[in-house]
Image (cartoon, rainbow, N blue to C red; front, top):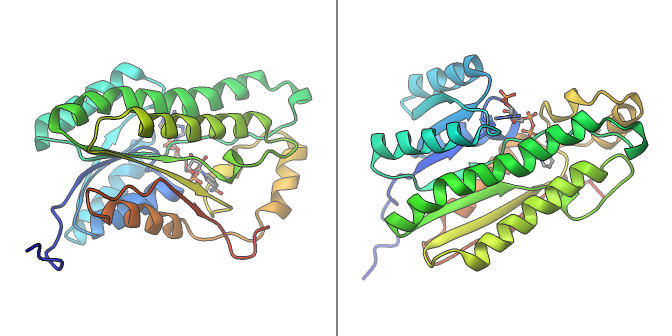
Length: 248
Ligand code: NDP
């Protein structure tokens, strides 16, 4: 008989975009739950601080610099994680950019950046982990889409396009992946983070001030990710939408 109360085996979890917001909260929470977390992003100083705090609390977290737009670097890092730990159980593909603007602002470089990080960055992660998951007979890909993957608003066309893409890629992976590979899309509503701080278009930035007035903590999203990970291997939580109660 299965012991329902036995502690599940700690997982080796790689989180992208762990230097702030949802990624940092997820890395913190999963490490506190006993998992081994490889926290990645470009700002290595932030990751070192996060890993230092986790380790001071007796949790296991490693800081590793990674730009998700660098396909070779992503594959290399996953290889190193597997070499160090013997396996990789979970990829949390969280890194993202939201550079909102109207299409007729023609901020084409910002469109490219969102496509590079939110879509190509995610694909680089899938390409890096999928062969490993196949070899080890299982694994879990968690992607961060958005409410923006379900609805478009003026100024969100390109961002929403990248999030619709994230949603579609995750669903496609679910349909195609070998048995044993779990796939979860997390679609947050407004969450406190640095996400809107990088918007350069003044009109879009102003709209965000009102839109983002009611927000929830990044730990609320981390909790949803933790829930998906904690399910038994034969249960795949396909999508969780989590937003402020007040958000319409
Ligand atoms: P933050 O801006 O706080 O975090 C974004 C993270 O992505 C940072 O850690 C940043 O790290 C990382 N990142 C950006 N570009 C790259 C890159 N090229 N390579 C590696 N990492 C990169 O925002 P959130 O925490 O809010 O966003 C996390 C995810 O959640 C995103 O995918 C976002 O679209 C999604 N989301 C957020 C919502 C919200 O309201 N906050 C709502 C819906 C979805 P660094 O700069 O150090 O590389």
